[in-house]
Every structure is written in C-alpha cells, then in structure tokens.
Image 1 (cartoon, helix red, strand yellow):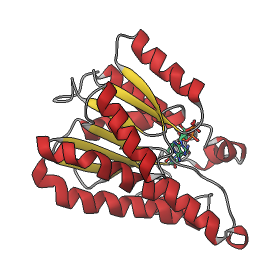
Image 2 (image 1 turned 120 degrees about the vertical axis):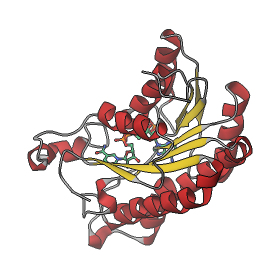
Image 3 (image 1 turned 135 degrees about the horizontal axis):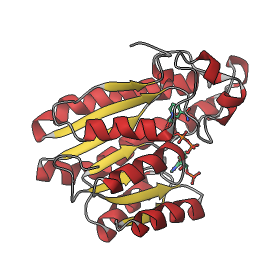
Image 4 (image 1 turned 180 degrees about the horizontal axis):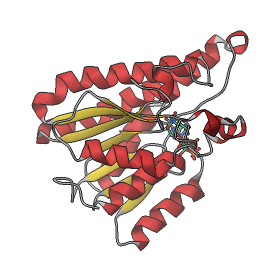
Amino acid sequence: MTVAGTGARVALVTGASRGIGRAVAHALAAAGMAVAVNYRAREQDAAAVVQSIRGGGGRAVAIAADVADSAQVADMAAGAARELGPVDVLVNNAGIASQRGLDDLDEAEFNRMLAANLTSAFLCTQAVLPHMRAQRWGRIVNISSIAARGAGAIGVHYNAAKAGMEGLTRGYAARLAADCITVNAVAPGPIDTDMGAPLKQAGAASRVPVGRMGTAEEVAQAVMMVIGNPFITGQTIAVNGGLLFT
Ligand code: NAP
C-alpha cells in the first residue's frame, strides 16, 4: 500500500514489538517508510519485527527506550535520526493497562499509568517536533482508547490517561496545522492483543455489536488513513465495532 506524500519518510512507532504497534510498523513499512521500532523490554520481539521488515526490502531499526523517561526518549529520537534520518511520522502507541478497581488504585499506580500512557506521548512529540516544524511537514498519531469516553474495564487512571491523550491531540493539532503537521488520535475498542487478552477472557467479543474483538491490523488501517490525509487533523477516529458511537 502506498500513501500519498509519505513514501520516503521516516516513522517512529512506540511500543512496536507486539500488538497494535507491530501492525502499525508493518503497515508503515509496506507504504515505503523507514521504521524505528521502539520497545521497552522485549528485545527479541522487536528484533523479529525489524527482521521481517528488512526481509521485505524495507528499512527498520529496533530502539529500546522507556517512553515515560525523558532522557531515554531524547536518546531514542537521536538514535532514530542517526540510523534512519529525522522522524517525520510519530505514532504514540506504547501503553500499559493495569486493571484497578476504585478501592485498589493508589497514587503511585495513577502516576505510573499517566507517565506511561500520557506523559510519554508529550515527551515523544516534543522530541520530534523541531524537525517537523523546520521542514513544515509531519504526522502524529496517538493511540487512545474507547476508554477516553466510555467507562471501559481498566480503571479511572486509564480513562484519565486516554482522555488526556485526546486533549493533547487537539491542543497540538490546533497549534501545528499552519506548519502542515497533522495530529490525530485513533481510539480502539477491544483488540485481540496481549493487552486485550483479559478482555477476551471476560467475554468482550459478545458485547461488541459486530460480534468479535478487533484486530491490530484494523487499527493500523485507521492509522494509515489519517497519515495519508492532510486535511484531517485534531480528530479521534473510533475503531470499535460499533461499541460506542461518539
Ligand atoms: P500490548 O500488546 O500490551 O503491547 C504494548 C507495547 O507497548 C509493547 O510493545 C510494549 O513493549 C510497549 N510498552 C509498554 N510500556 C512501554 C514503555 N514505558 N516504553 C516503551 N514501550 C512500552 O498492547 P496493545 O494492545 O498493542 O496496545 C497498544 C496501544 O493501544 C496502547 O496504548 C493501548 O492502551 C491501546 N489500546 C489497546 C486496546 C486493546 O484492547 N488491546 C484497546 C484500546 C487501546 P514490550 O513488548 O517491550 O513490553
């Protein structure tokens, strides 16, 4: 698949060792982009993604970094630029989903969730913006969740992080439109990945109007759609099988 105007670009996908991030990395590579595959711990999984992209004739590199840590994010952006070129397309996908009820959510876990799912998107965006602004072209996609607007199954800390991510999306979009940088969010419902496994076990598929969980590739397709369209910015694209209409 080719996406207009994005052929020779460099993309950075956070949390691309598995799940949705991996599917996005493959889709970007299939569109001709060089891809920096970020991961936190699963080095072998990230290496397999890189190997698969290279095997198909693409360019890719794996970069370890905890995206909640500003120094590691700075090193990651520098590493991607050194290996592939400065980042033109950023997909803030890395995230965690520790399930907590109202009575077992403490301040430490609340802060950990916000750091991994929200502060991370801010840090990565700030790290790549100077190049995007200088060249007056860029694409940023934030992987939110149906939980930004609905209750979801994870907890209020996850609700808050994902709602914050959508605020971040609109705030950046408004300030960057004149620089030809679009910023959008994609909000999946239950997706069949490692993170989605507990939802699967709890019978999530039966609650989705289309009768099944989504696939990582279906989320990646929405990511590619917004990357390919310069007139869509500040939006949240829902990919949830009809579970929530927003
Ligand atoms: P997943 O299968 O659990 O994969 C998570 C990815 O994020 C892994 O690559 C992991 O790296 C990476 N990661 C986690 N914390 C990180 C950190 N601090 N720094 C760098 N990388 C980190 O999750 P997924 O289902 O693909 O979810 C991806 C995104 O979609 C998340 O933002 C999630 O909130 C969102 N989402 C998922 C669902 C769903 O049902 N699956 C629904 C709505 C939204 P390692 O492999 O190295 O650990």
